[in-house]
Image (cartoon, rainbow, N blue to C red; front, side, top):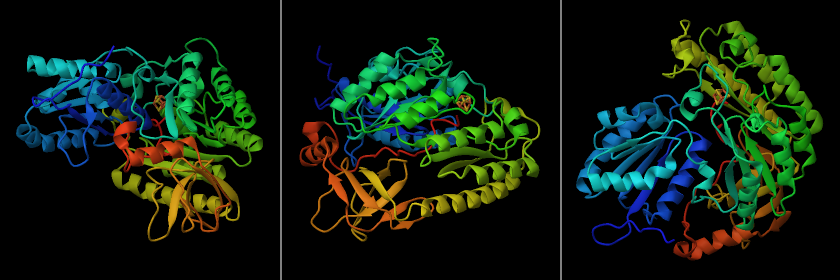
Length: 497
Ligand code: SF4
């Protein structure tokens, strides 16, 4: 069945733009939103054109998320007035939380949809146009797994694959359980079929995505389902890199470490959220592991994979945090030797239990502790990076990061352990995003590595061919030929899992 084509009054296809806020889960959902709109006949708006439909995929986790949204909506109001037929849709976690409130505060919005029913967006847009009134539709539980919806992927070489949505934990700082609901697991066969299809399409790297990937399988009663999934990914020919985010220290089990170590295409990269090094604060956060358990997992991981790059999330200034608690966090950071840490200054999120805790830490104390934490993290990540000087690393050349810098002659990409590498490309050599190179690290900075020597190897890949084809004929491939977002392989966490 061919898709109905959404057209403007002049018969041109309606254009769209998706603006994404927040975590990787939202980035992934946005690919689905774009795919759905394209399946309904919309085309992506050119960068300098006013779109017929603007979709905001919002986040409720980050600070000031609502101010940012309403600020953006305010800016769009006169644009909409001047552009006949323009529609604005708001989806994502903030829409799930605020619902009708969005229309009340911004009555020029046409559609509000939630995290559980993104598949309804084209219908809601059409109905809003037809009825001439705003449509608000929020589903309380997941309608269809987002991965079953059409997608418009932003990268030729990398893809997200959802394995679960929602979360069964109740961390007191987190809004996810109330917005994304209980964990729903996707069947392994569906996940593997999607991975195989992506690989057939030229994808080299996948990231398995879930709020808590280690509890994957709880819904269908297999506690080892995640390690089995990793091992099954190992059997997919052509799949070169497998990553996942985010695990939870409570559910992280030895079978996952063994699967990581024994499956050759699973990258030795682990994003393991710590949140706090103080047992007292972990209890108040309702995180059921303790600092010693956390460090013990890291020891086991490094025993099995000495080259593992471990990253984390840390919240500073959670209610009730004393200097002693903060020192406990610094102590764990010293022992853990993270390759990267995403650090957050705590601020109350409406709708979370911790927002009403009485002993909120003054903002200036939070800020000061945060600066000390960042300084320590940087010192350690720099030292860890320096240990790699002289090592040979395999780099998957990135799209967004892969443009050649004319002043340095360098391109960029990610090593297998997720580190960002800037490498020199000799005059006359063409390296494409999606290609794979080997280089020797010549310099280390706190957040990246530099490789200014010769290319030790360069493998042209199908993903690189696809990127090159898109440059020549973007319309034919259906993908933009210019700047696209590369997927950050070490990026901000899915949530604060
Ligand atoms: S922080 Fe992570 S584990 Fe905790 S409730 Fe939120 S999504 Fe679940």
